[in-house]
Length: 220
Image 1 (cartoon, rainbow, N blue to C red):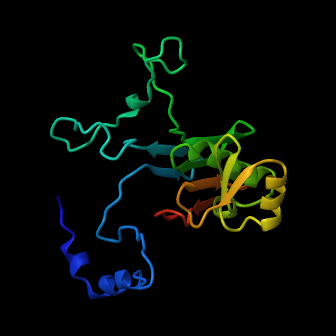
Image 2: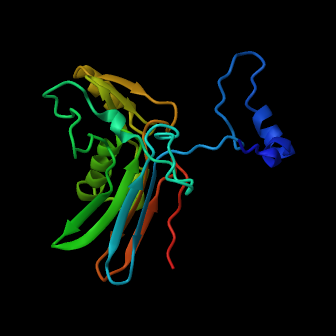
Image 3: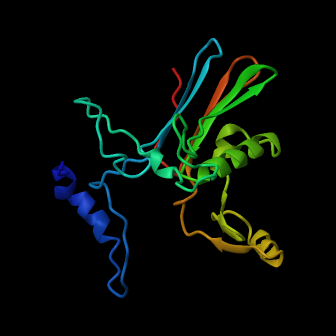
């Protein structure tokens, strides 16, 4: 394994980690800079001719299948884990069949032309996040950055719903009154991370990048 020596010996990093210690209570601080995470990534690109590309890639679980392609160092994904062995099940394993998964590179056309290329990472938050970002644009008139930044909710299963900070307490109270089991999340974990590009009238592009994850929007 690669040991992040520079990070471990950094005085500023040590001060940062020390600040997470609370003498009067037990804590559960997440790994810091020396710990490298590697999960789903999303990227999108567009050119002056109006061509747009939407790409999402994921190993699925940690090191994927644990198998590399020859000597390339490229680890193969293990989405096959999602198959079901129950005969007759929609996701039952079969020759030439792809497993059900949530890898969704979003792409929206308008009047037969590419209009928006976008994607939301985050497991089963992907389809939920796609719908919410698209609705923010179409139904609430937000631009792409506003649509990505807006507070999200996540259906956890059944009546259970998690919501981010930013959703008014009155909304949560009304949802609970209607029978939903609502919890307010303390952070952004579990609500995905998105990027997107929208083609504006006249051929100008506007891009957005999610503050919940690493990423940036660049034009050149």
